[in-house]
Amino acid sequence: MQIKIINKSGMALPQYETAHAAGMDMRAFVESEIIIKPLQRILIPTGLHIELPVGFEAQIRPRSGLAYKHGISIVNAPGTIDADYRGEIKVLLINLSDTDFVVQNGDRIAQMVIAKHETVQWDSVEELSDTDRGAGGYGHTGK
Ligand SMILES: O=c1ccn([C@H]2C[C@H](O)[C@@H](COP(=O)(O)OP(=O)(O)OP(=O)(O)O)O2)c(=O)[nH]1
Ligand SMILES: [Mg+2]
Image 1 (cartoon, rainbow, N blue to C red):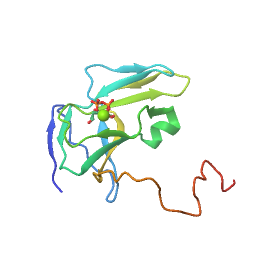
Image 2: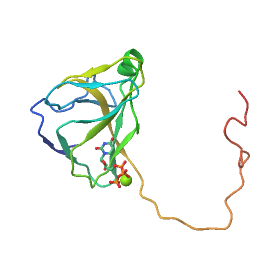
Image 3: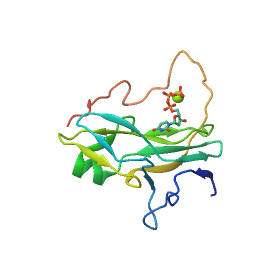
Image 4: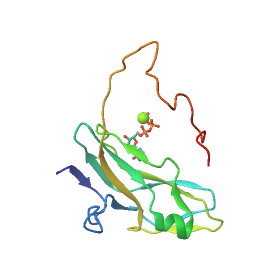
C-alpha cells in the first residue's frame, strides 16, 4: 500500500528494519541535541507529515531497546495519528531512568505501525447480552 508522505527531515524515509517488521523506525529531526532529564517529557519532531487513507491510523510506539537500556518510553503510547491529520508527526518521549538521556538528530526514537481501524455507529440499548464473564474483570479469574 502506498501512503503519501512529506519528508522535511532530509533523512531517509522510515523503513522496516527487517523483512516482516510491523513497525518502521522513526528518527528525531532536531537542530541540536536534546537532553531529556529524569522524568522529563519532551515532544520530539520527526519532520514527517503523512496522508493516511480513511480507515487507517498510525500508532507511535516505544522501542523496546531504548526502554530496556535507557528507560525511554512514550507518555501517550501508543500515540494515535489520525487519517485527517496533516501536521508534523511528533513523539512525546519520557525518560523513566535516573540519568539524563541524549537525543541526537537522526536517532531512532520510536516506531510507527500502520493499522486499520473501524468507524462505528452506536446502537443505544437498555441491556447487553449475557456472558459467563459478566462484569468480572481486573483479575477476577485469579492469578
Ligand atoms: O504521538 C502523537 C500523537 C498525536 N499526534 C498528532 C496526530 C494526531 O492526529 C493529533 C491529535 O492527537 P490526539 O487525538 O491523540 O490528541 P488530542 O489531545 O485528542 O488532540 P486533538 O484535540 O487535536 O485531537 O496529534 C502526533 O503527532 N503524535
Ligand atoms: Mg484527539
